[in-house]
Image 1 (cartoon, rainbow, N blue to C red):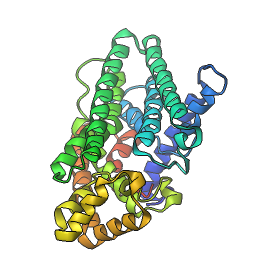
Image 2: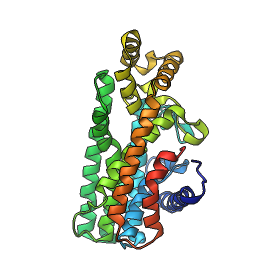
Image 3: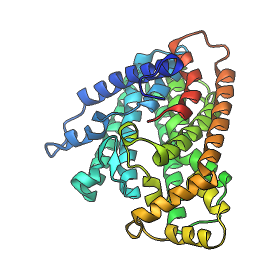
Image 4: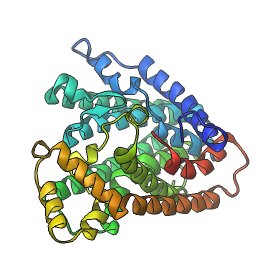
Length: 347
């Protein structure tokens, strides 16, 4: 699905584009002065590149579909985008990634130490935005959002630790349920569940538990991650904007990799285990191409597509349940259309 599609895809793209313009515009306009000179400009580096603004869009959509005022959720949506970009900077370092959003990763440009500092500065600016919620939303709602942010960060950090440990330990006995547990923490919580919960808190002014979109967000985030893993193998760089086959260079335990490990036998399995046991610097293009070819031959990509479709269907059912009483609106249509969009996108 191209970035400028028609029908439901076009509606989702238009909603995301409108949110991105609003959120990133606010983010860049309101960056605080940071010393030394130039640090604020580095914080703006990743947000200034092409991106989906999915997390702020989910926050604003959840707020809007519950009858809330999107203007009151905008500051939180900006904070979400800042936290996301900080995660990207640090994630790229941990994964030794070379490309991000159509350009070199920040650590490739600046060096690892400087990039870590920019990531920390980006988190600092996001924290400042959350502190500003006290004046905008009142102390109770602002504190609830900070509590949700701490919970999101805990899940995300723990999920990342699980994935890094699998690589470090050369784990070759995983199954899809292991992947799902990691994905719930690393991806679903901060990509989908957390933004929806923040939007619900703003809409309901902090009353009640913001759990109505939790199952929707879990399935949606997992479908998003599997599609992202597939695009890393099969995508076009100009659309995808990241290093093609980077996950293979990094030895990530994606659904496809887990399936392949469990499928291969004998010498081929031993070759794969040995490939995964080497550091990224010890892998070569021929080995990466061999793994990719084996994934295709073993049907690993098709298996992953099947999982993504199942998850998207589950997210669609959860959306219908969560939004059944909501009146028609662009927010409602966006949330309903997003599951199918997630698994058909090319970027």
